Length: 324
Ligand SMILES: NC(=O)c1ccc[n+]([C@@H]2O[C@H](COP(=O)([O-])OP(=O)(O)OC[C@H]3O[C@@H](n4cnc5c(N)ncnc54)[C@H](O)[C@@H]3O)[C@@H](O)[C@H]2O)c1
Image (cartoon, rainbow, N blue to C red; front, side, top):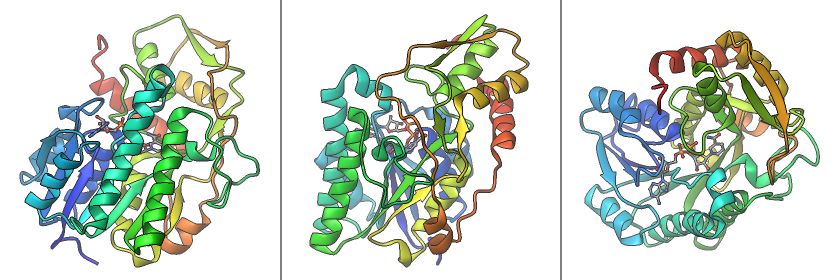
């Protein structure tokens, strides 16, 4: 199916995954491509290449939690498909759980309401593996219980329940893409940074000692960001995903200790790696079953973890402003 006659909105499109999704969507030459960001973590520089390649790209500065703002964008641009990625990230929910949880829930609810009243046709909503909490059994398929550990995770699980309830009650065209941990170029290395950009930045700044939260045997299923972006494009072309939640991950379990070892090698880091106290609400184990994505979407992650870490380190070496 071609997206060339579609008008597409990406909320959170100037963020990490969103900007890669925008890149992937420009390849489809859609009729309209609009992104909405409040630039909480999103950055203009993330979408610089997309703007050059696809001058029609429209950037709206506003909040996806504001019903009227989103409604106007949908109507003005006759949007068919919404990718909903806008989010306040996990670390913010540890500092300000009330605001960040409400914000994430409001974003999901607004978008569903606007779908219900026919302001657009199709919703692809981004969930998170955090909604599962720590693995009770592995690999984790989509039927795994939702046991969110943090307010962020609860807001993501809530968003999913809202989307599913709108699907069941109002028979809308919705699907939920549930990514596991993404990494790659453009991941935020500033405030609220995740471990990969944070460690790379500290290594580039020649810090003597880096600290892993806890014993480092906690695991994640990491996926290179372009693999997620390409899978997301497939979601809008494939009717089999309607009404479903689908894991997007690599199907490989990686410990923080192994990750740190790889980063030390790739960044030629000679300092010390320490272990500090565990982070509140830190998931112990994540390892995805991706058989549903393989079956419905022909999904196959292309970038092996070791290769992706090299690509990521190379990118930060070229692009990270060390003083930020
Ligand atoms: N990065 C990961 O490892 C990962 C893993 C699982 C799920 N996800 C999900 O994927 C999506 C994208 O994550 P990301 O890592 O790119 O995050 P990100 O923080 O880089 O991007 C999210 C963007 O949303 C924007 N935003 C926040 N509140 C907004 C609002 N009210 N209105 C408009 N824009 C708003 C931010 O400015 C930011 O640019 C999120 O839904 C997240 O929950 C991410």
